[in-house]
Length: 313
Image (tube, rainbow, N blue to C red):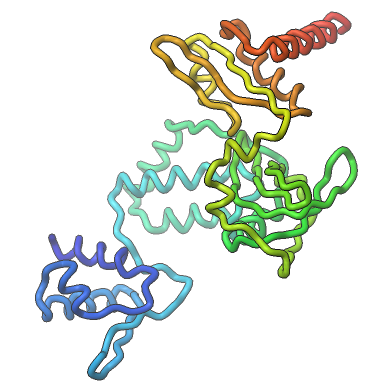
C-alpha cells in the first residue's frame, strides 16, 4: 500500500477513536515502528489533533472536536457527493443545521477551476427527479435528535383544523416527493403512526417517560402497522406496472413475483379505505385482478365518485 493510501485509510480507521497505541498502527498496516512514527507525524501535519501520553503504558490520544480530519476522495466520488448534496435543495427544511448554498460554495472552493467547469456542465446535463415543496418542517432537527437518543416526546400536531397531542417515540424519518415524514410509536394507543413533519407544531422531550429500544421498534415494521381487523389483499398487476409500484409503495405492501405473475400483497386498516382505493386507481388498466371483493368494491365506488364529479363540471 502506498503511503498516501495508507494515510487516508488511517484517517478513516482513527476517526471517532479517543486513543490508540503505536502497535495498533504497526499491526494493521504491517509496517515498522519508525514508519508508523513518521505516519503519525504526517497525520498531525494535515490537521488530526493527536497528542501523546508518555510513560510505561504510553499511548496516543485524539482530541474531540467538531471538525473532521481531511479524507482523500477520487474525482468520481467527489462528483457523486456533489450531486447527492444538490438533492437537498428541493427541501425547505433539512434535519441538518446547514445552508445548502453555503455548503455548495464550500464544496466548490475545494475543486480546481477545471473540475468546477466539469461539475457545472454535468449539472446542466444531469436532471435528478425532485419535487420542490413550499412546506417548512422546523422541528426536523429535534425529531432526528430524539430518535437518535431514543427519547419520548410530547407532540403537538395540526389535524383537521385543530391541534392534537401525542406521546411519541420516533424511529424513522423519510422523504417522498419533497415532503418529510416521521414514523413513531404512539404510547397512548400502542400503535405505530406516520406524521407529516410540516404539520408538527411543537415537540417537547419527556425526560421521565420510559422509552423503547430502536431495535424493538424496527424489528418487524410491517407487522407493527397492522391493527386488529385489518384486511389482507392481493392485487395482480401487469409487468408494465411494476415500475409504478417501485416508485410509490408503503410499508404495508410487498411485490410478489411468481414466474410471470406480479402481485401486490399487503393489508389496509380500518379508516384507510379511501387511501387504499385511491392508491390502486393510479394503476388504471394495468390491474388484472383484485382480491378480496370488498377492496374491488372500494375501488369501483371511488371511481364512480370521481366520474360523477367530472360529469358535473
